[in-house]
Image (tube, rainbow, N blue to C red):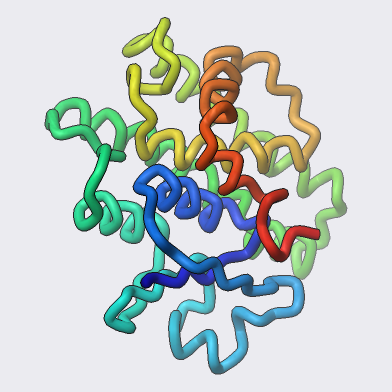
Length: 214
């Protein structure tokens, strides 16, 4: 049995919870309170020296960190439908879509980055929100255009099937609303979100459904 060390509002933890749910994996969720700095305690650093969530404990006791590595591991080792298509071009497309969020958006509005903007750089809450909204909006615009180009009428970003791309998109939409972003410019992304929200495993992965939700 696996154990996922997760924080309820962490976008990267949310990604992995979606992947676990899609793969129907048996996994215990272990809350790690970032606000109380539990991720910096020696007991957690022994599991993940970087001191970040998520961290996945495998059934043999080993630990994996970094959501892209965890998601790919789950897809490659667990049975069932695939998060990354077998077709190489489609697989590359899903990875491209995921990377728009994972490489170009999320790192720039990660909690560590936003806290650094506040202190020592002295930005107030409006300045921090403007920063986050700028980079989230740039990524959403690119993803909106890409999805409209490759699968304009499909329920999901890259076609008819849920994929790793949704594991990245859905938590970022949740995060965008925390900054009161106007999302009306991204109807394709919102339509995908609507489709995902109908899936039982996605409801169970939502931050509000987590045992440590506040």
